Length: 392
Ligand SMILES: *Cc1c(COP(=O)(O)O)cnc(C)c1O
Figure 1 (cartoon, rainbow, N blue to C red):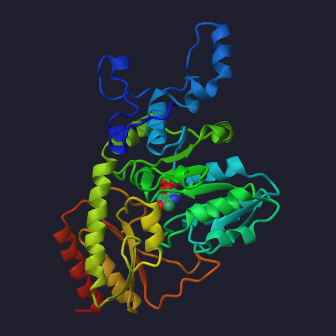
Figure 2 (cartoon, rainbow, N blue to C red):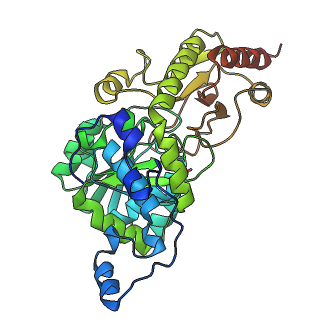
Figure 3 (cartoon, protein in one colour):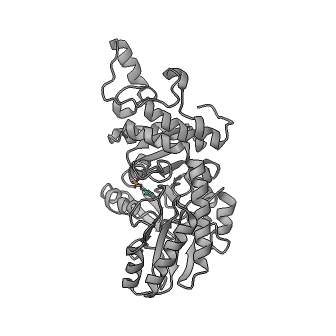
């Protein structure tokens, strides 16, 4: 794909659309396909030779898949994207594309927990070893790189605990030793962190979150420069992964409003974070855009915005009181995933989620997603929650 000078919001609005090819209809149609017919044996063989770049068989993607792939790739300043049926699928697909038996992986200790489980259960089974590292390691990652280390995996900010990694320093050290740098960029989305400006080789998104944005589709996306495309596509499709064209359509529809939704999520999250910071029940707020966050300087240097997901550590309260707070919330739903239009709050269970440095806060940690509701209503819901937390 030619490098485009279009700015992000223009890309979001127009990328992947081709009205002239579809009778003037603005959106790309949903092509549902398994079978693709060829008029001649010769054409069948010709298309087979370029099956990654043409409509060849449903599993390789349809024009609906390609519309979404090209839009996300352009937005993230990548050359190519590969769509998978879930975010965890994209994490697994990216790792399996880059690793083989005998290889070693460096994985950040604050990673999304199912990624940790994938490394410990699946990668281990196939002879790939994993060493976890402190998210604050920076250029010190060089000391952990072994002769057989092939991949350094980063996720910033950290899942549930929101440590900000020095990705440029880590990437520089990793690349100097011939390692690939894989990033889970779900929190920032392709809008607020541009991975290929910071030394990343493969960027991974749980599109389930902000790209889809409406809590109704599971999807994963890997983006990359041309140099890695064949390797990733060969591996992902060799394992049989394919995303539904209907889901690709919904993800592309979600993408159109990503910038306006994210701006609102950002603003509401910051308002809530500042309000929570003043509360006597709160020990500290975990939000990289707050000036007193330990990762704030690096966040400010590398990111262009913050999303709606952040955390807070409460003062020590009994488990039943925390449950009373959460059980009674009216607007903040309790559930996994995030990035939809609605607010969420869940307790963070971190006792088995860290192996390098234990999470040693005295009080309980909660994770919040600021949705698109009215901010005053959300604050009133939290205020009533704190009354239940205190037991009155
Ligand atoms: C949710 C999430 C995933 C997994 O995405 P699914 O679509 O739920 O499989 C991966 N990484 C991060 C950071 C996530 O929050």
